[in-house]
Image (cartoon, rainbow, N blue to C red):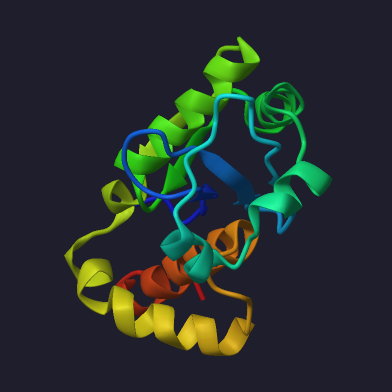
Length: 170
């Protein structure tokens, strides 16, 4: 198994199900760089679930005030992530939300979105939740914000691999 950690992306959304859309996108790179932005909703993106807002803490008004356009976000993602596999922990949702973003921007996605679980062996899966709790305590980042969650996933993957590594290099 490769010891190099991949790019991790996370997406917060207006809710779940039909009509939901991305409201915040963040990623964490193997070189330690992170990026995050709020998404300015398109005119027909009206779905809003107060329960989702209670989880992520992002008010819809904040998106209109500080959000970037789907086109600007997609151009940035394509430039930074082009040709790479990019991993997420909620592929079925994240793929739909990214597709909605890219459709609004009329742009193709130039990276491959993949499920983080593809990278987990039995040992990493067994220790995942315990390791994640330790990482969350160490990082002290706000949960359910995109770049913080992406960094937490990245660090958890690295720590789980280290815990499970039989043949680690010094």
